[in-house]
Length: 425
Ligand code: AMP
Ligand code: GLY
Image (cartoon, rainbow, N blue to C red; front, side, top):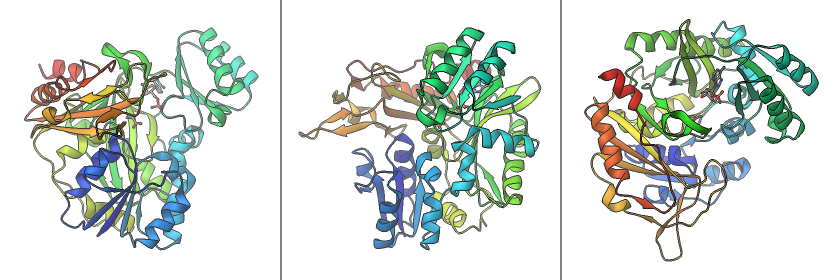
């Protein structure tokens, strides 16, 4: 089989790494890919958003399966385009991908299908939104309706902060058109985790549980980022609780969308808060999580390719997946300044010494310079994943590898998985 993966980050490196291990795959491409990905796939210089060019390439090369990493080509309708051209592609249609592309759409569907989520209101008029927050109890959460690379959510402790956030989103358009409509919702408290499941619109195969660390610095301080580390499985979520979450947040969404005539196919990701009143959905994503993928896929024993192919064929016959009895923990090494301004082209040293049987290094934002040396090329540079018989062993494996890598000015969190390790104690 010829497979094409779309995207260039750490998530796509993990997908390529896993797909490359399938005996079914004879040729693997990644568009646009990266220098790290180039070790396992042939990179094609087409951007992830250039959906027509990608379709032309897939037709020319007779690609048997395309796997979409990031959200933006999904929101642009890449799946509809490929399917109309007779190509097999793993991901939701443009209509179903609205679940991530519009928070208002997503919240309306959750209400319609009886899925627990924070109470909310939607506003397109800034004065009405301001009036609403001034009358509301604090804290309150303000979310840009559209795609904002994980940065469009602001938790406001005072009404003054809320008014400022609304001005930034709706008047100054800090997130472009994504912020011209906002969702304002009540603030929930609890432990957060991610649930991902593969589905063809009917059959559901849950993947392993994972927890992301969104804040930039240790002990959940600092600004929100795309994700600074993750681990899987989550000891805070018992098997029973996990099944309950699948039944309460994944199944009703998959069934509801199918009944509404917009079946969801691909991987459905729910960000869940375990509150005292039970699990509440914070958001749905229409794709694999980053960095959740970098801890889930190293634990997966089954071949991912046949499952993805069946999803793309709209007929999932495989019902379960096999997992290694191991834990995985990933630490993101980020450029100094991220998620704000940062410099690129800073040398990365120690990659060869750090890789081992217990540690896989996924490249998120790196490149090779003219002399063939590794340099930084993005905010999140590497996701260093450690594997072990338990979470502590995975933690040790990941940090032993991280400590061998030197990137001037870079930073990473020291406390990935620490709360889970406390629970295990
Ligand atoms: P989202 O992009 O919707 O997942 O939001 C990003 C982050 O903001 C989440 O991972 C949560 O940590 C936080 N968040 C979102 N919605 C809420 C909420 N209603 N209450 C508390 N925290 C929230
Ligand atoms: N890890 C968060 C996300 O992928 O959206």
